[in-house]
Length: 381
Ligand code: UDP
Image 1: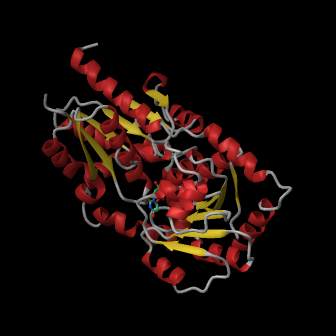
Image 2: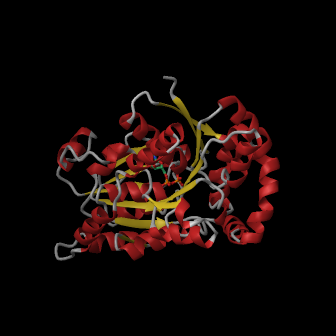
Image 3: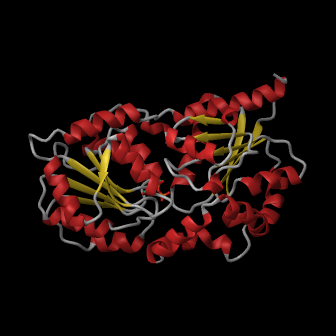
């Protein structure tokens, strides 16, 4: 039987959208080997008109150097009338060439994991005469931008109750909405090795407390400054700093003489190993990294967030009792120092709560839902 074709619309603006899509692809392959032909398309790079097709390249500089502008843009566009009027614009910017992509790919099912690829993408699909179901997988944890929500999408899958409430406010009907968690790599499910063994395998000191610091796929935020503050405080731990795709940051970290053991990494493809080796996670409020951290039972120290887009993720972490936001590097070092005191039970409490909240099998649940949709269409149930 020819495998059914599932097309994932995503974009490499940050690392989270690709990670989420890839997790679902892997889950489909594990649960239904050979049944589906999946494809990930960076629809912004491939279909948006110039210069918007270069958005994956300018995402890091824009959110780094024009953060206040990004915030204003997020807030001013996050209103129903603006969202409605943005649709024709998005159609011109992306939709026209997206129809070509959709015609070429002839998908049996389309899954969007990006807020700029929802309502107009669904209309593009219908415009080429396709009746393929259109599913949106939201990757923001609390206050997702209204652009995510398309009441006419066949199904919207959201990670948390907070995002579910947001979707309802934007008119997504309850029967087309399900809370499933955020899809993270299935490798976060396995808890095979102990921490010491995992650390030894990664070249770390096996029996030393380990803090893992990440700035999303792009190495964003105050990664360097925070690492310096922790090292200068000479906290009794080793630090792993993952610079992601940020080469300048990696070079700067490499060229530094550290006061404590520090392992500097560029973009890693084995994040589950690093997280399984760690005792605490320091990160900007990226939804992918947060949910991966929870899957590994890691307490979370947020060192920043992208205003607007990631503000809700901070609320999620703090309200859920799995971590705190501390924006100043010295404050982060001080907080970590307090957490490491023998009488302090914060790390144990946050870690237990993280395990309770984690949904490491979300990708498997989503794979089962997608399979259901396609199977019931085939059998007419
Ligand atoms: N990531 C990775 N290797 C790296 C840095 C990050 O695989 O070196 C992954 C990380 O595990 C997560 C994603 O990139 O799945 C980052 O997503 P998040 O939502 O946290 O932030 P974004 O980069 O989208 O802003």
